[in-house]
Amino acid sequence: MSRFRVALIDDHEIVARGFAGLFATIPEIEVVATVATVTELLESAVQQMPVDLVILDLRLSDGSTATGNVDRLRGAGAAVLAFTGGDDAALMRAAARSGVLGVVRKSEPTAVLLDAVTRAAAGETVVSTEWAAALDGDPDLSDAGLSVRECEVLSLYAAGAKAPLVASRMGLSEATVIDYIRRVRSKYERVGRPANTKIDLYKRALEDGLLPIPGQP
Image (cartoon, rainbow, N blue to C red; front, side):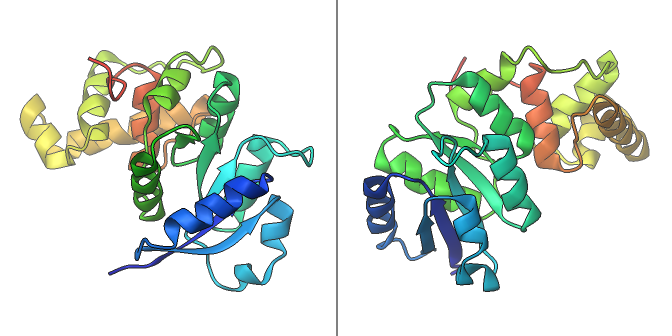
């Protein structure tokens, strides 16, 4: 069984203690640090070994920003899961644009938090209804100018279908599908919305309404 190294950054001591206690009984997760700032984590001895996932409170009292914190952590090689009260859609959008794997509200049931952290530690995107809705309502997203056909390919591919299956469903060759995906990535890149990975493409498809928001009909 894989064991993932996880750190929590939250400047509320009671939250940090509760988090560490909660995951102490989960064999897949090893909580290696609970600190109050990104700087504290990056300067700690914990960084001598890779941290698989950082759970980051989006509101810290040290004057840092969510975007800056996510950038620093990802630059250090850690994946990030945002941990928030969920009352600020703009803050969630900023975190999403910075490349977090998802956003989990602090008010979620324990089972939801356990599942989200375990999945994120394994590198999966964790899409909550609130996070997807915040992305869907982002007024600052630039239109990538995808064609109808590119949208169709993206919606199938980002939903999990591999290129051969997309080709079969759309009556195209696999090479043509791959070319469509390449063009889609390029168009998103040009408008400042990177789509280098399949997870990125999934996020872009959510943002542009090409895939349904999880939990909504």
